[in-house]
Length: 187
Image (spheres, rainbow, N blue to C red):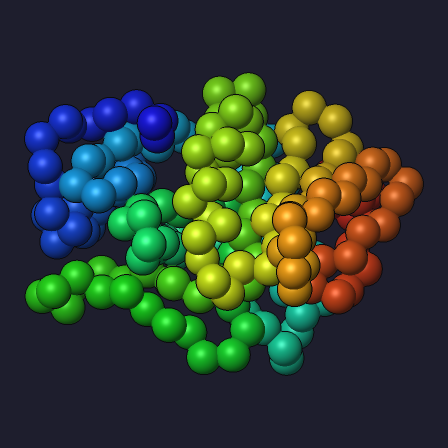
């Protein structure tokens, strides 16, 4: 189950978009149920901005990097959320409400989540289970708040997702480009 439930009655996607437009709190939407998302800490925000900046620099001219203000939508599971960052290469495909309000990316190639004590289990399990249903998704990046450690789950052409971890002093590849762990954690 997603974070904290805002309501348990059925809420259409269009009603959800109306709620998001007027709310100061972000929500997730899962096939008619709306859940309030918790606010991030300073450290969470700092790490999210750092990895977004590193990706933007590495992928300049190739892909577009978006912040946590951009929603994604998983068509297969009818799930909408705001990851801590995402990357789209090529034309952006959008999911819109029936009345043309709101939009969410449906074709990210890379999604970033910054882990916290309250979201880590959810980000690693239920949320990942939704994300792997996105056909375009190639990499799922988890950034630890507790220590300099970044994990990447990669979708191979065949077989199971592959896992890679890099710690302080190490470099990992994100969408084919080297990213130094120390750069993400630098103040």
